[in-house]
Image 1 (cartoon, rainbow, N blue to C red):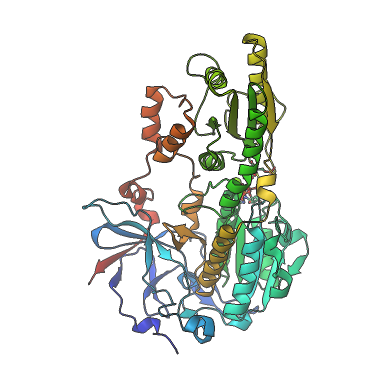
Image 2 (cartoon, protein in one colour):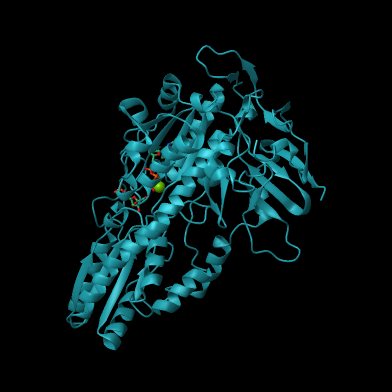
Length: 540
Ligand SMILES: Nc1ncnc2c1ncn2[C@@H]1O[C@H](COP(=O)(O)OP(=O)(O)OP(=O)(O)O)[C@@H](O)[C@H]1O
Ligand SMILES: O=P(O)(O)OC[C@H]1O[C@](O)(CO)[C@@H](O)[C@@H]1O
Ligand SMILES: [Mg+2]
């Protein structure tokens, strides 16, 4: 062994369990939480029999100075006596030279890094990365990968790096691609994935596996996982997909299967909470520049020229906000989180007219989910949902373009030339840029390390720049939105000089709603009876 054994690393944390569930001793010698009893197996799965009342409980450890660890499940939580194996990475020449390559069992990542002198240490997540001991032998791993929801630049990179990570780091040879999203588990053929097959897929947009919305049938999916003998499931998708992954994990745990479920967050909208940013986001912002530049050129070439660009962002306006901030030629950016109005003092029309008189042209960036309340009832998609149950939006770009034209021709008798550019699908169908490729690679590798180490029921992602394993319930409990009372939105307002469209009373109300939860209210989010608590005292 080239590196220190996990058991010989001195632990700064002295764990004691004060837990309402049974305590089992795990292979690491540390206490762990378990929920059932082991039975023999005929199909190669170790399994435990779960009682109907065995509902999932968040694993929360507390320690000194307000330290809270929101831990992720581990297979040993419900299959106590699983054997461990030495991580094959320690003999891998690429990694064995790296000192401290293995992550310490007690490493965790702080959710909040801006603190005051007397702040509690607050919420932490388990640090991602390779562990010295793994819970799978390379030859026994049978992994599968599925992509669900809308497209996003970098999907193929994540697929590629999961396959290559499993092959090259862990010697795993059996990796299946599930075709066409969740329904592919039970309705479509699978695709054998090897490093050769995925070699250059990161140069292409889309997903080589195909994707879909709807069709999540938990029982059929888990039956298929069980029937195929799959024991690692990598699920790449947005908020809906992670909800689906969470119920798949629950069902797997209920059946007591030795199957690790790892979520990789994918969303062009950046609407997944806790993580710093989703992969593909930077690519989308970059691609959006081309549309905004075109709108600016068009607008600038005509007297009273107006360029309107619609960008993606169903409920979260991050793409529009960052694309605007990056570009600097935008006069106004409208996002779902910031209400606006058209007519009267302080309204959009008044502002457009002012800018046209000053500059002779105007560029508007609008997120697809902005102003939906203003155009409700006017177009046929009213009340419609897609197959996943997402509300179908009306085309705000077309609507606002028409409104602007009507206003200036009917009421102002002012000649304008308006060009509407809709690059929505173009910004997510492109291959990912270099930085997103690197990011996607890290996500994929972190997911592989986590599954091999026996963690399950987690989504991987960077928290303040460090990759962490985040329990599903934290990822799916809310959406990430632009906070319009935060500095970033203020930066945008000062860059465009657009009106805020807010009256003071809105600002006060917004502040109350949008304030990020304090550590205390984070802790208070779960009732005591649902929480598995461990007390951790610092011996250092
Ligand atoms: N609450 C849920 N429970 C189980 N499955 C779900 C749930 N919500 C969505 N899904 C499933 O997850 C998959 C993807 O969901 P959805 O279409 O909402 O996309 P997404 O993952 O949110 O990605 P994006 O919105 O970024 O395109 C679908 O197959 C859908 O059936
Ligand atoms: O591919 P579809 O179903 O048209 O979905 C479009 C939606 O997908 C997203 O790209 C991701 O949720 C949204 O920005 C957009 O509203
Ligand atoms: Mg979604």
